[in-house]
Amino acid sequence: MPLNNDEDFLKDYLGKTVGKKILLAITDNSTSLLSVRGKGNVIYVRLQRIFLGAGKEVWEEIAGFVRNKKRHMPFFRDFAKQNLNVLKKDFKGRINIKTQGRYHDLRDLYELVNKKYFNGEISCPITWGMKRSRGYTRKRTLGSYSRHTNTVRISPLLDKMTVPKYFIAFIVYHEMLHADMGVQEVNGRRSFHTKEFRRREKLFEDYGKAIAWEKRYI
Image 1 (cartoon, helix red, strand yellow):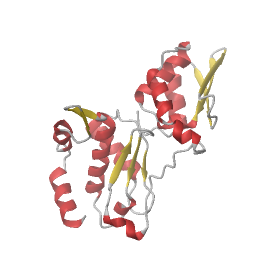
Image 2: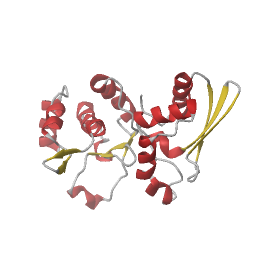
Image 3: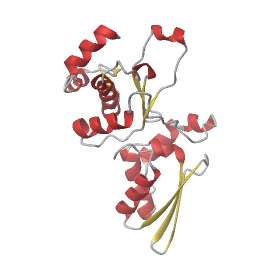
């Protein structure tokens, strides 16, 4: 599934999976997360907006529920629990997505990386992060992946004409690896950068060039 903050894509996905016409309404209702009712060959689906940021497993369960009111939905429930803090903070149901920067478009890079390295199977929104104050540049986080919102954020510090696309693509790839691999257990401790993670990281086509550029300019 591609970048999944597109309501039309999700409506088409449900329609093809269920085999009926889907009328999808995205809501800001924090008490009724998902409701389904059918009339003839048309199914009306109401879904809380936060699920636009869900992963493939969640959407497969949603499709199963729409098809036959399947009740066993562990991935759906886990995603809802992880994001309840977002709902409670009156987030207005929206993940603020901004892919077009001044010099670089994250959507194009995301889709290229997704297709080339993940067979198009990663399904998480990507966005430029918020700009920080000038004094915040001492510790530079170039990218991050939040499992709670299933979102990749890239530092706006990289949205410069002098930053090569291959380097931003490498940061995008790094964070998408986190989305793909999750948190691993090593000797009873949580580890984000395991040996397997580092091995896969080096599969990036411009890995050596990206690391050299980072050491020189970051």
